[in-house]
Amino acid sequence: MLTRARAMVSAVILLVMAFMPAVNAAASIKSETAPPAAASRQSTAARTAVEAEIARIARTSGGEVGVSARHLESGLTLSLNERELFPMASTFKIAVAGALLTQVDAGRLSLEQMIPVDPALVLSSEGIAEIFPYPGVSASVRNLLESMLTRSDNTATNVLTRLAGGPAAVTAWVKRVGVEGMRIDGDTNGIVGRFFDLPPSEESVDAQLKTIFASNPGVADLGNKPNAKFDDDPRDTTTPDAMVMLLSKIQDAHILSASSTDVLLGAMERCVTGLKRLRGRLPPGTSVKDKTGTVGGSVNDVGIITLPEGHGRIVIAVYIKKSAKPIEERERVIAEIARSVYDYVLIESVAHR
Image (cartoon, rainbow, N blue to C red; front, side, top):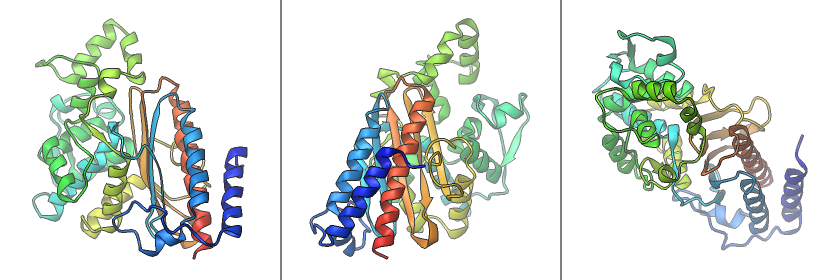
């Protein structure tokens, strides 16, 4: 059932479409590839109403929210703080997958290639660390990608980041495909170590954290609380616009082969870590390919939403930082924003088909 606020926004859109067929030609479409006709079709009043609703929802997050959304077929956009930097958390794993699959496309790696898991790269999370507590694990590139993207497996991510050439190589790939405003400075060991301010050590990050948590269990709770130093650090950040640009290029710009694109987006469609985020309030059965991220005051979800009956696809990134609210409350904000975007773009798409 639509919330009262969302129903009001939908009503505004319908009224604008009924009584304002002449569209403001100066409406801004922030897309390098947006069709020229998109600007003339976008209703300024309706877009303003929906962006106001997004801003209202964002104010309930307890932190700062960034949103970028683009309808691939028309170029329609919605945004909020779209050029501000936000900690990526695990959404950076999309870039790792892209850089790695580029090497597969070039023949330097194969999906079937078995990769040993260095014990120093193990980091607690769902996936390898949860299932295999002892050394002696190897997995194929394909299985590592699947676990990284569907379960946000930190250990698989560390292995694949190293295999891709390290964080600097992943950032170089992002820039090479034409995306600015995103930087990858560490694997998950690096990000988590920086968040908890771990000193350099011969011990693995996982071992250090287990020792700290055992001696002071309250420290573990800080993993879901804002960290001012971390939140303001430019390392491992992106703008919402940059993430939407990367996903758009993966989906439609053929920066990967067709088979590698299917591997990456297919795994994202099987993602199970954020069912209450982008997917949370969309109609049942809606196709969503997404990747979540969570660390400290940040709760994120980015992905591609397919509209029904051939009305196209929405690429969307929603980032929240500096929020001390329960994760469930932050997830609700993402879900409500995603539904507002979905309703607006679907109505506009139906009207101008």
